[in-house]
Length: 406
Ligand code: GAL
Image 1: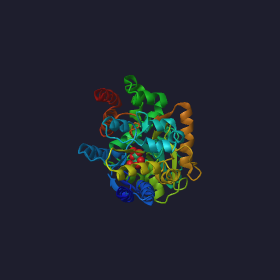
Image 2: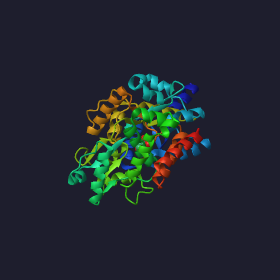
Image 3: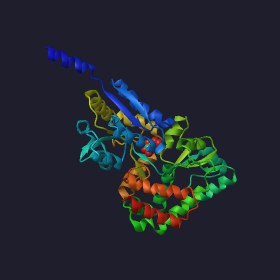
Image 4: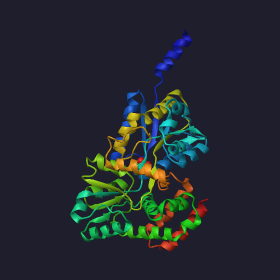
């Protein structure tokens, strides 16, 4: 009886706990992660928030390394792509396969997404969404006043930008942080080069593709875009660049659809106040956000991880979170009826792209390459963007940086 009492008391005390490291601090991002916090609390969980500001997550990943090295990993971490495997190889991830099996994740997820979430065949991370990276966002009023439509080729983009510049409007809102340069660069790469080129250069790291005339043309277009950015871009956060489009100071931003979450959080309406279009040339660069669980002690923490995993893949969460975040659900069975035309376009294009081989992992958002290789490419792109380096020198530097990172 004493044992039963002890067990009973223990069960009553055990309460799911989670310390969650993430970088969702902008308006749209914070609104989205709040959905998970609320669901976790409503199921009796206690959430300890560890937000590390900085778009793209570079600062969050530095904070994570420090925490793990000091032997004090957070329970759940916003982590994605090959970085999940890299941390698994360090032996610090927990296994959430039982939750995944109990909830049929293999049937609910596209295989490519499920693969990213698995470590040695078992689930170690839970996906929240599919973001498309290669989008252009436009201020509807500014474009109407200038008599312009959303551009469908890079030549059209350049011509529209020149018109806008002549009117005293900043054509391209951009924040000078390396991951934002990389976002624009890879959107040009898939658009100008096509899927096979993107795969060869930025996934397979093929030297001939990295130094090809096509890659030179990609850098040429990046150089042209540099001329459409205002003088104060250095260090600017992505959401402040989005704000420039919102208030009509700038016409366009090239950014993933988390920018849509920002427009929506400000109460703006897609198709009316702002417009979306895939970057010219097509292809679909995907970026799947997910949470990986780290090995922690204590039943309350383990319960917290399992509860988080279950909630993240819940049908309601996948809908509400993604309505706020600008992305579409990772789960295949959540209808897009409640979503806007940009999300509809995203879902449609994803289907088409997956049928014709142009559904590609974003290198700039950590879906395609390991950290060292992605970092080498981004360093070169940023060095180019912030200097007067020629495109020919850029491709030589790119191939060398990639080689040295292997
Ligand atoms: C991406 C992330 C998105 C988004 C963005 C800006 O890498 O996948 O969820 O919020 O960074 O912080």
